Image (cartoon, rainbow, N blue to C red; front, side):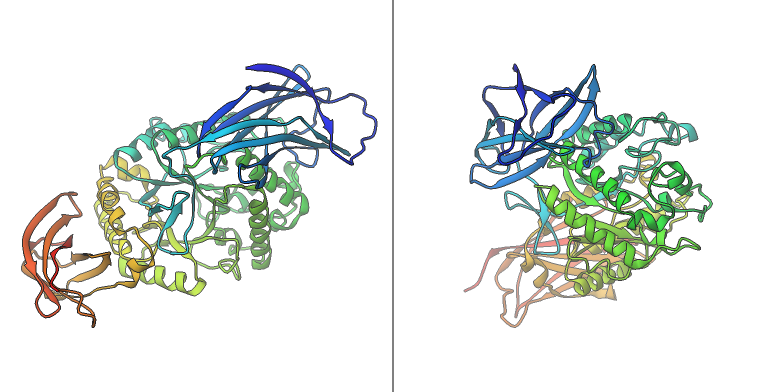
Length: 580
């Protein structure tokens, strides 16, 4: 590493007034750096000569890397504040290349009326086998990596780490949870990153014991460090993240659920705490509140946006619960307009085009789901049957012509208590019926600690081990099969290329014998020849080979000797010999 003092050079055509002190930048520079495609390239810079009041505020100081990619594309990548010491300010540049070849970049800074620019730096992006970033797919039933591989999620909410002062199990850290996800092959986690008790980036007085008070300006340094820790553990365990920026209780002026979620009184955006917003609605409408939130998004993109394990940015958790409460006085229009503003800002700021989403609990905000910038829409379904969940997936994805998923699902919202077996069966059925529906990830339970403590994560593991078989393009969902099952058992079927998948669910209270399953082909008569038959047990993850079957008059009939009560299986039919 070669350390150089490089004065900021004036950008072409820009004049600068005289300063009380000249700002210079010292660059930790590699003569030539190489990085694998989709991996992190990092560079650190140090400015001196001026002390910034709030280096997180882009209106005061804005530092960007102006990048030229190998193909000639221009990217403006935000840089991030790392700290200050002895008159020096430290800045970081994290970037993941999406093209192979030589990159060039300069560092640009704007402060007061100055526009300053460094010399050019270079690095080379080398080929790799990594998949790249996830993005929305025109096929609403999946997402897609940069390399073209499709993805469907089997996930779980890990809302937060252990709240130490109220008795949560201290073992429940992100390190623990990400290891558990890897162990159970769970590939998606939804987590809150600016709650008053979990990665409290903007909260000066966090609660529940993990974080200390912070009286400085900008983002909480302990939260920044913990965000690093979250990303590190997600990457180590190959878990994709949905990052939830805010939750409804942060705007509650009253304790509406009697769980102590009335955090507007301590919200840093509240004018009583030095913020810009006199009311909860002004969080969405006040220009300074909007700018402050955008600076948080900017920092997240700058410091952690490089990570291919960030699947999606979720602006709000259950924003309807912030709006439709007594005396909250937040208009639908304010919320929808705010989302449009933030989506447009993120489009300009995030070079990786992370998936954008938001969620409501049960009541839609007028115009919100139709917002062009939202790639994914979510509702949270509590107390809803598997069949009703399937109906909701179809209804909302078709109404808004975009991907829909169930970000939270459970038998009830009050808590599992002593009903974990009932909750697990409900989740199991909801996941498997959704496996055969057009949704990019299966319904996710909220009660992560209960499932872990009771050893119920196997329900997600066996779904995760299977789901790649039903991850394909639109043709997957266009080929719905015609199936009849003895006893009128619940069933769903899809075809992926030449392989047929039939889910059969015995919801009855008795074991059933000699269950006949009949698959009928379409008018084209595509069912012909001989098929190998496998039976996938969704409760054990085991696959059993059954006797081969031969199609007769465009039909295939399979007989299951027994199907236990409240159990389900998937039949897999692979052609071995096709008739002419």
